[in-house]
Image (cartoon, rainbow, N blue to C red; front, side, top):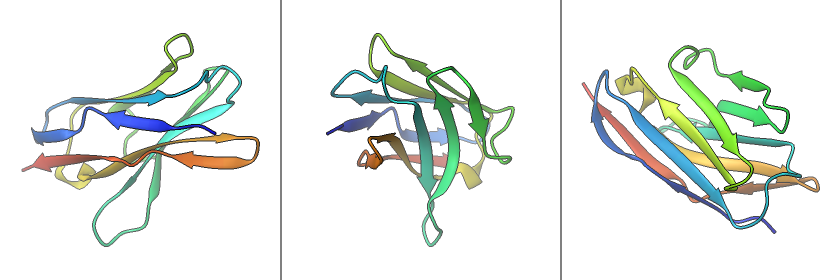
Length: 115
């Protein structure tokens, strides 16, 4: 079983930056894909960014060029650097991974971008 705990959310002005972190309770070396999703009020959960064990990244079009995902296998963490934040980035951000065909999710961290 994998437990994921997110941190780093908060309130920021438009144009500002935040860095989210996700800590796993076990080694992530063997976990191929880890990522971040978000869910805004009244909307479906959507992909933000994913990263493979080889360091290959995929981003939602809406965050390309502004967000950067990274992973530290030694620290068992995945991070999301968010720059040039917009009000439409306001959402609860969830860390996720898939291990042995099971999807694991953190409890989420709130990001609010004020205009």
